[in-house]
Amino acid sequence: MNPAHRALPRLLLLAALLATGALAPAVYGCSADEASSGASLPPDTSLTGPYQEGLALFERHELRAAAESFALVTLSPTSPDLPEAQVGLVLTELLLTPERGAAAHLISQLGGQPVQVERDLLGNDGILALLAAHTDELELERRLDDALPWTADQLQDPGVFFDGTPEGTTADDLADTLAELAGELMRLADTLEGAADHPDFSEFTLRGAAFHARTTLRLTRPEVLLLASTLRLSASTLLWISAYAWPLDLRQALGSSASLDERVARFNAAAFRALRPQADERLRAAQDQLQSALINLRVAITEGGANPVQGNLRWGSLRGDEIDALSRILDALLAATSELAPSTLPFSTPPDTRLDLRPLFTGRTLPPERALLIHRVDEFGDGTWELDPESVRVLWLDGVLDPACTPSFDAADDAEADACPQLFDAPALSEDTVERVADPFFSSVEADYNLQ
Image (cartoon, rainbow, N blue to C red; front, top):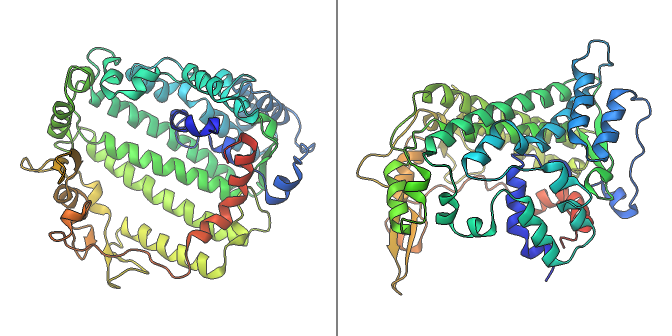
């Protein structure tokens, strides 16, 4: 078995710990030409001083020092005005996210040990180096176990996981930390947008040695805006979650002393029942972040297709009808978050399907008689916990999607559920649309890290 395959769940967890977008620089591959030749771009000798030093430190996996060098360029009034340094600063800050600030506090609240990104991810004995060296399965798994904040036992058993949380830690505590993390992501998105909007910005280039890869990181304006969009969307999600009250003591309510049914019952009693005092502010900010994310994504797609300078993503492969279809969909989603709502959704059946996302940011709660999760028993007597379609309708679909519908999560629901509209079935769009844009960098990443 390929060692990366068995270790994939823990690799995904490591990516999640690096916060949203933190592994983006590691997975952005080279262009198609670079992938075939194995060549990497030479450093830009016109960019000297602290910026060039920051790139060199980045390649040597000295992230803190690299961040200081990039910050020197962005903050000093005597330094050259280099928007590329802003991008470099954000990438280093993202990679260091688990070690400090809200993300580090969140890991601590969940009973995890401190993360050391320079050593465990980027170092010469780190995860990326082992993947690039096609390390055997057992060694890769051992290194992953050492790198992650929680033990294998904690990750395999939710009860054991929550047993490790500090006494008295509540889900409300986590929600406040998530709101802080959202603020940090928003500030990084601000910096990326500032770099992308700078008239002198062309691309940020970093040789693959920074990630133990043969390929070169190349971020043009569309890639930078795509990363900013990802950060905004993540911040929106975190703020939305943190607007709700979560009165759960993690260890007492979710630890191993309780059965699965008891844990679900306690979760149901708390989930989407009430709002936090800061709910209005957080929900407004969540809506704003969603709007900004959609704007960034639309600009990335439209400009990427017309940009003669191509980065790691092959935006130039998009046809005109594909760009038009994606733009119409994003315009409709953006309108659905604004005073223009409800918006008519293109390429949907029925054709007059309308969407208004604003009610999602008003703080809807579940009525006492409903629960988010319900217990089902199949014909073989096996029971599972599933989302309750009626609760989903009440929370997230009523007044949002027209015509109204009740979602179906199981064949048994089909007879009772109101059919939901078919959304965004654009003839111009297919799996091939995404593959043409993304396959060159995915292929290069798979080759570099033996993930085929």
